[in-house]
Length: 209
Image (cartoon, rainbow, N blue to C red; front, side):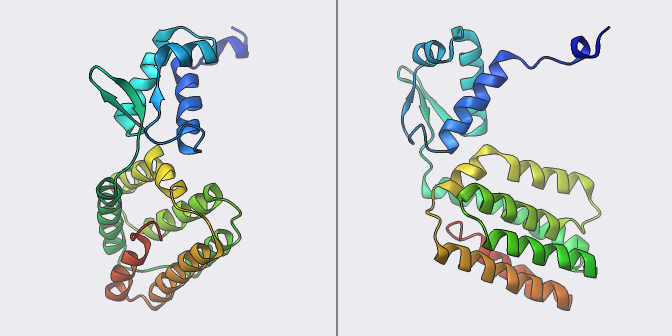
């Protein structure tokens, strides 16, 4: 069988999901905007079935809501919903860091410093999110619990995380706040001071910095 034929073909609904989710995260679709199956199907040149499947997945992942009798809508996150995401993410991160005992090698500390520099040089919210995600996952990576680390990564990779990050304006003040918080964390990590490091994580879980 030719190699190309052997490749797994992605379902059409996944392509539709990718496009709608990116539009929601990037602000092309405004928070609270209706997601009308017929209109999306016509715009994308597909039937309603893959659109319905994509919308169902979006609801499951928190990027859309389904209101009986009214239809689907792009998620408009409330303050309490944002705090719930941070609460879960922080709890997992704290657990992982405690398991690792704040013991970081010179190479691991150098990577954290590099990620701070990358975040400071960000020119848009997506770049800052990518650097911030990598920083926090690297910080937690000393945990020996692989299932915990995979769960934490799943939380970070939920599209709602990107939606939250893009909901706050990116300016020099934000870049400075993120970098300052991360530098303080690295200083505690370098000192191997677990009890000083843990409270500093709160700096990263307040209004997306």
